[in-house]
Image (cartoon, rainbow, N blue to C red):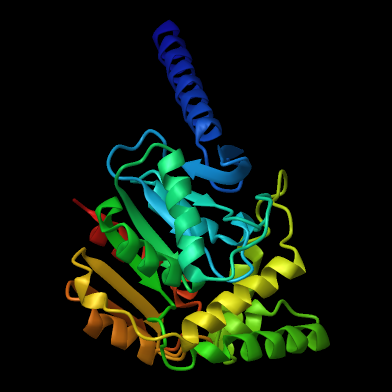
Length: 306
């Protein structure tokens, strides 16, 4: 009888300790919905950023976001997924979210700000993940300071002067109006197909963006949003750049039905940059990496391996 009670007592102690350790580990885990926002001063301007996976070694990953996107518009499944193996940093560029100042009117100036941010954090080599506008900026960083980048992933984006990019302003304003008339977020229309699969993916994506409940980012001011649109339009009408000089490995990704930056631009990038891998997701629009976030993270982690 005593032996049975002793075994039972020891078992209960072991279960209690295991549960406590597991609970403490869970509480200590930093995820995107709870990670603190930090600042770094660059020339008198505090750039706001969030960093995950700080205990991971290797080259850090800089996430460059889309039009009108603050840090709260980063998909937590993607950020947390990359942070499972790498340090990942997202930030508000000049005039976006909590970072004050006027947003530059050119992609080139945005890239200079992004480079200044990277250097301010003390990094000499980084990987880039750029989505949409962030993909334009990524290309500029690769051209301006190639030695800064080890590998790059660019999604939902295209080269300077690419097909249909000059129409982003018109499409954006039309879908903002469409969203207002239907009481939906404009990203529902801009990022996803309007079939059942697209509607479901849009709903799930927008729900994920609301997971962070405290210390959310500031909204972007309309004036700076318009300056971003001007920069994108200028990118769409400027002369093509010589992307063959980019030698780093680049993963280019899109959906097969991108309305904002037509998918043909992704195919062109795959041809223009010498060392590329190409992923085109079927039945997906501009936000393909959000619709297929699990597969995207799996492929991104494999691509980023040393």
